[in-house]
Image 1 (tube, rainbow, N blue to C red):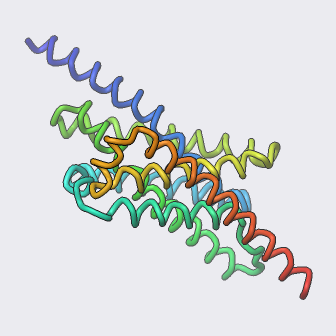
Image 2 (image 1 turned 135 degrees about the vertical axis):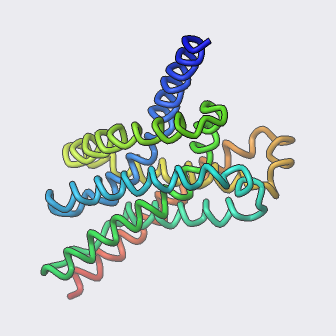
Length: 229
């Protein structure tokens, strides 16, 4: 019996790790986009603090995730927030100088990571909780293991963004896609989405396009403002 329980535990842990690998890609993209403009030292801090705090958030969310998913308009607000974050990350931060500005930029990056992860992690948390089958120890271990995965993914993504800038645009569009999906998954739209199979995909695509257009517009406006100075 103990062996069976042990086998179930390890199978459950492997399942949770696999779920995290599949579902944490968008979180790694957000962290990479938020940290990419920071100096290398601050990039490491933003990735470490952001990833660690994000997993702590997920553990806390597990308790109330199912209830939150059923609150009307919550995911619409969260999806809209993701669209805004995606557009801001695509537009990029203004370059600041000075130690105070560096601390401000680091704090801003971590704040962006936490807000985006809070919205994007609800479905991740429910999937992981289902795999844990009520085993809180298994759940916490599985989520804790996801920290190095997200850190590695974010670090790799930043290097790829430096080498292939198009990934920045694709990453922002991915955040927009998730934002559109989040809006379409809201409790108030669930019946309509179930009855119209095209709605979910269309909302996601519209989110990606909106972030691209909005972000590029903000980017252009910033460049014009800099040239005018």
